[in-house]
Image (cartoon, rainbow, N blue to C red; front, side, top):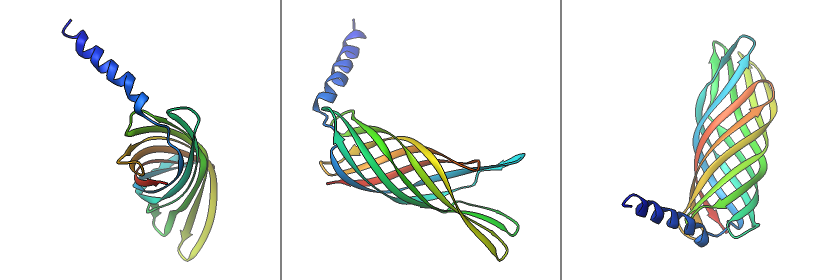
Length: 181
C-alpha cells in the first residue's frame, strides 16, 4: 500500500499536467548553437569530421487541439566542420532547411516536438589553388524539447539527423534560445 500511494499520486500529477498546458501558437524566432558531426562515405572508406554548428530558425505554429500544434520551420545554419588530407580540403558551408513539425505541450512549461523536411547543404572542395562548390539535397528528421521561461521566451535542445545525396549524412545536437511573438 505504501508503494501504491506515491505511484497513484505521480500518475495523477502527470495525467493533470496536460490540462494546464496549451498548444504552441504563432510566429517564433530562435538562435541555435551546438555540435555537428558530418559523415562522408567514399568507396571503401569513410570519415566523420566534427565541429561547431550555429544559425537561426523562424517558424509558425497553429494549434489543432488544446495541447497539439502543427507548424512550419525555415532555418539557415553554418558549421566549422571540415576534412583535410594534404592539400585537399572539404568544407561544409551553409545548410538550408524547410519543413514541418508537430508540437505537444507536455506540461505548462515543456513542449516536445518532432520535425521532418528538406535540407540543402553547400560544400566547398579545394585541392591546392583549385576549388569547386557544390550543393547536396537531403531529408532531415529531428526531435527536441522547449522549456518555456514565460509566455514568450524559451530554451530548446534538439537532435537531428540529415541524409544528403552522395553518401553524406549529418548528426547534430543543438541548443537554442527563442522568442514566440
